[in-house]
Length: 580
Image (tube, rainbow, N blue to C red; front, side):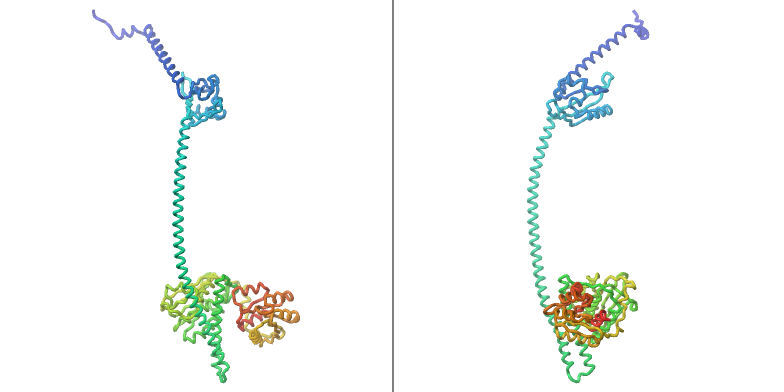
């Protein structure tokens, strides 16, 4: 029998209105329902037996719709007290605001996690949990599942581990601390040893310096003796020749010139000793006044011209502005002293040739210099020569002098606000330069400097001067200085007598007051005189020459000050300021 069958007929036979396909669909639905039911049972078993707490929340309201047994155990609340509640109501968040914020974030992002969240149980005990929540679809409806894992054991383990680490760290710190203490102790011992070595080295150096200082001081004392006795020998010797009968006028002038030069040399030695003492004590002072530089330099040229002629040396003076009025507000006496020291050295170390000195103005500075064609100075001695008691010549040869001049000059120049330098090589001569600040003064500030005193006629016949001096020869010298002025002179031999004279004689015009006197000194006498006659000029005249003497005199009430030895022209000019 031939089987006549086609697919078309088969399909037609089993068309849509046939009962067989509908039976298949029902079978499929029943099979799906069975699988769904088994899946739900399996999910429920997992849900119930899970070792993490699980909460199911309504997506819209956030109310708890389901909870597994483990969350009941964690929270320590019965199921009926959990269902229908919000998370914060069962202790998962500290307050409603935190819960709402977390719920909003969860709805927005579909996921939220807190690695460490504290839950307060019904008995008040805090349990640390890890909270993870996400959104998923269940039967086409969004629900929220929250997984809560108790991490108490992990936290305890972490705490124990941390405590163990801290303990080990503490032990390590203790070991490190102990090791550090040993290292510090070793460092201290090393440092102490180093200090001991340094102290030992310093002691060796100090011993060498002390020995050198003793040697220098011994040499200095020997030099001072020589430097004092040499001019004294000339002074006493040629003074004796002055009384010889038949002495010619030329020889008389030569002897007087030698006596004057030797006296200046002796005074220079004494001044150097006093100045170095003031420098050592930090009491060196600088006076500020307007100084006519060209006048000062011309006076030095006249003074030293005669000295260098005796040695057959040519003296030159140079200035880039010789016809201008160059005024500097500074201490003229100190500038003169430095230049004298440099010129004296140049004369001492120059046997032939020439010596040149002068100044240049460079912007806001004035540079003085002294240049010679003498023996020169070794480069290694350029710094040494400015030290106290040091004197270095060619190849270490020692020359005359007290070894203080350049040291004093350096200190004075620094006090004047400048610096001093030397440029020299052995056999080529030396050039000393020192620079001080220069500020041009206005014309209305210099009128007193321009006053010409050389043409003054000294006639004080209507004036009376009280001379207060306890030394008879000094008294006689002052009388001789004033002998040509026609001034009336009154004498007092101590301070108390001076006060009495001022009280008795109202015509006294000026007082020359010595400082050191018996019975009553000049300080006290001046104080009392100023109480009697405040406007009476009192001029201090003293053999004390320390730098602070003038300032002390002015502070004590004296109107002015002059130091011994008294120079005639300077003395008469000073007196004239108060009597003319």
